[in-house]
Image 1 (cartoon, rainbow, N blue to C red):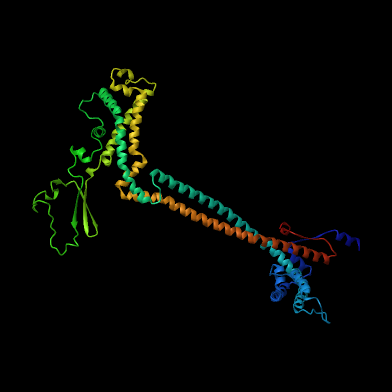
Image 2: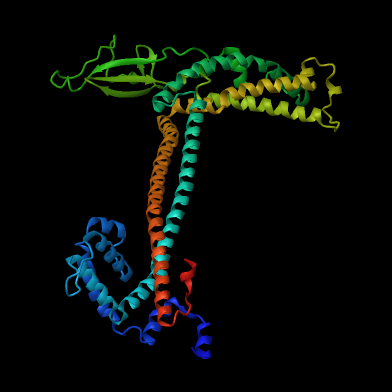
Length: 486
């Protein structure tokens, strides 16, 4: 070996993996039309693969075989079928003979070398990155599904807690929302009784307010202060009719049952005996029945079965605390009293000496309460307590439920909406959980495929480098590029 050849042996052969086929063709190791012959060989491989024993197929793990896989098949068939040869050097086993011919066809014009280079380029450039990208996408899907599932489950907990809190505030169990809400109106008489028990506690505040106002503004002795509050304290929670007219209503409710028109169609004209003689043309006959004034009654006709029920209900028959009009008048009086007491508290607690100072009313016993800070605070607390009993959220719901069927529908729907949204969120959480599991299963399937593909690619890299090195007096061959980062 000359000194030039010795120096050449010291330099490795570096080939970029993507230029491997061009390198082999340029140096005439492979023919330019190798691809057509490689396709023909692959057809033979696929046909021969169907005749292989199952144990060999399972050992190969793949169906896309290349030249070095075919060598492995021949070695396994030698063990299984025997490697005896005929007098002419052919194998006795037809299967072994077929695979040996495939190897010879591969080695002709180094077709195997170009095909292996093509497989290596395809794996590094496309197959491995695609698998890794798919696995990364599955991991991302898993994380997103876990996050969204957690958000949905948190929403489920929040919505169900809101439902429970709302039901607790309304004092219902939540099993039959609409029926339970409708039955809550039965608590209103108890609310009225409790309010009437506490209401007398504001009398001291009323007396102080009246004395203060008369003293400061020189009001007349017959002028009324806080009329609705004064009336309820004196007469109690009577009906609106009694408040307006000064005497109890003559009849709280009038009911009469008329035969259905469908049952009297063949009986002639309908006759009603009112217990007296009424002429059809008498003036005012439609406004007085049995001596009862019915002009203010609202007549509601309801058909049920074969009878028509006519129920007369007058808003004036409602208690004062139940009627929205009179209840608002009472609340206005209480608000007026509360604002007066609040203003007096602000004046007493400030450092500014006002003209309404305490020393001006030392001789008036009635005014002493509105000049004492402790007593004033007690009065303010009593008034606030009564107002809260009539204006808290629960009682307001009861008033609205009693007065409006539509509000009952809206309230029940708003409560049930929490449950409906919670159920939707729970269903969505199950969907995300299922998608996350599917992504996890996909990862479990793809990761072994990626490991096998990388291993086969590295194996091809070593075989191709060794084959090229043998052709150049065992010089070091380095296949460069992304293949070394797999």
